[in-house]
Length: 443
View 1: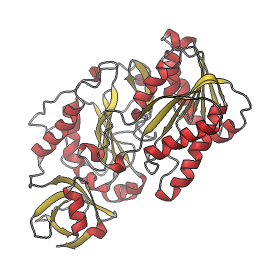
View 2: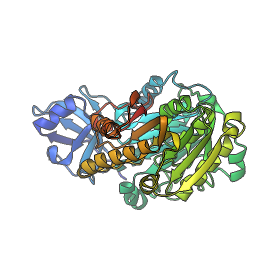
View 3: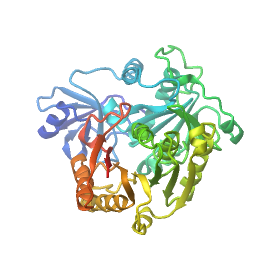
View 4: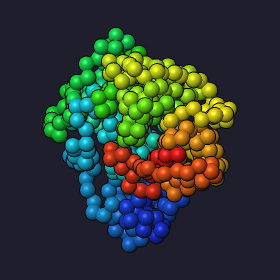
């Protein structure tokens, strides 16, 4: 892509101007009153206010209704190597002290909430995974790849792309979802004996010379062979695999870490049902917490095989080894509906997003209530329900109210133990970023 000689200039509506000044990092195409030329994907767009004064600068995406992802508001700043370095280090420093050597999987950049709108960066031991939700970041990958790797001491960077930008990435940039941007492949033998290095630490020093080590442009062919297996990382001392090439999100649900820890603290002596279990993270924590037995329930055979492997990875822990682990492949809604007697002491509900658009919000709220009623019916006296939602279109009050109403309609006395939201490495600085909520109730 040939860089234009002068930055793209935009003038926007007063309403959009007010939103940007208030800190919201999105500018939609229908808020643009005028632009001086056609813009290219990923170039910097300079936004001016109604008095023709500088207002903001961001990354332009001509093919998206969300036209500009804003990087700077207020005073103009040069978006150069030094700016990216300082911007990245600021996010790293916000996570200083959050994790020790027992946790080598966590989020480094959380999109808009860390000032990197449309970009997520996760760490799994020495492997970094960058996920892009807008094509505007693709032309920046060549300059960001060495920055990400050197600051974190990462050995590998994997690219994940949201579905909507995959065709453009292939056609215009010869990049694909799951491609290794830098680093070696992982073989099955390496996975099984992988040394968990780095100890969850990273360097904030950034070398001034890296031009000889990293390309300034990506070649038209893939930069490395595909991974042949998942990577292994630590979470509070437990070992988990992350399918960084094909798995959901960036390979693992890192955002549920704190809720998994809570489940561990509540599991001693209990029979646990982990509905919508995915790769069984909650169950492994429950086992370490002293659960007698755990059932992973999921419709995906692939997910359940991963759950079995995660249990096997942690069998050296005596509590995990002592816990009976079972997997059930079934639709959780239908399976729960067929339960006719209380048989569990702890039920975890962690379904995928039930409202991916606003039009699905009402139906999703009803579904959350239905799931909660079915789960409560499965609980023995003194049993605990842990119900979670990752649907951004269902607000936190709406979700909690659905669960509380289900508890009330059950006719059983209940005690609300705790509610939780986003973990500290997944900050939510704008309303649209607030998706995760969980409630724990005892019956």
